[in-house]
Length: 221
Image (cartoon, rainbow, N blue to C red):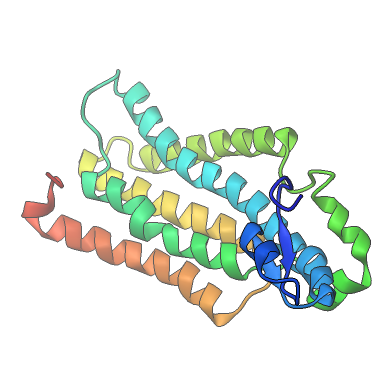
């Protein structure tokens, strides 16, 4: 029965450890089941639902900026954004805030969730992740990518700025955009969240400066 369930919970007792070995989660007493479901279950559902949408968003914004560039330049084989920045985007520029918020953010307190068990029903009602939220997120992503692409382009239209420099502007604009988007959605702030979000933006500026300053880092191959 434990193995047939979507999530198996075993109680470690005098009957042995067969139930524990067959389960996904094990606990020593039945009273731990309530916080496991109503508190940690709700928190994990809320985090997972939001993080799925956010990861679609943060990756799609960057890819769409590259797409608009290719479309705008008549399907050229070149790219304005440095190859190193393309690689570091998901490794350094935006990864740490995603991990930190996905682990630490809480929409409701433990006491509130235990006091109002009906809140556990959010998962059954697909409140944090559903088709409507997905397509709204994608439409918002499309709009934001257009704005973040054309504002730097039009601001320097007719100037002598080269493609590499405006590519750096696009990189910085996208990183600031997605991190501010995440910051606006954070519910419970702490010093780790502040350090992750604002530190990633600062790290992006530093990395872009280093990449542009070292000629050997023009390409990553």
